Image 1 (cartoon, rainbow, N blue to C red):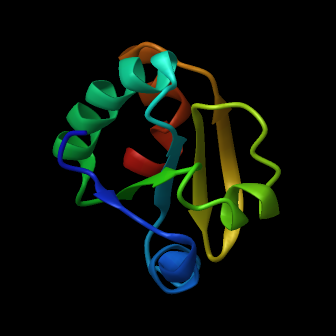
Image 2: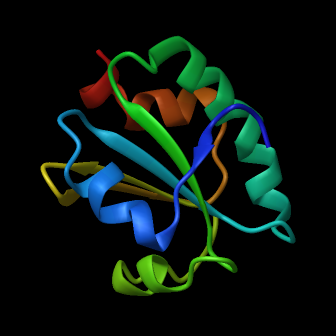
Length: 108
């Protein structure tokens, strides 16, 4: 899927929680249709705003610990982490405009 790097349970703490800038994590799975819809949109947003916010994808089937820790029950779930905390959570597939609106605090 696209050009957004994957992050695993093992890397999550170092790559996401200890990052100096906001980090968006897209929780997804191969079998999830809405996840496949939102993937290319996130690729576009990452290409446009990757300098302000770091983008990662996490496959919930391959990495069960982190989604469980953050109570990710439906996918796609897009969490934005800042200073080790979830500062925004977006559940479900949304069009690009809606995602940009939700992320405006971090990419403006």
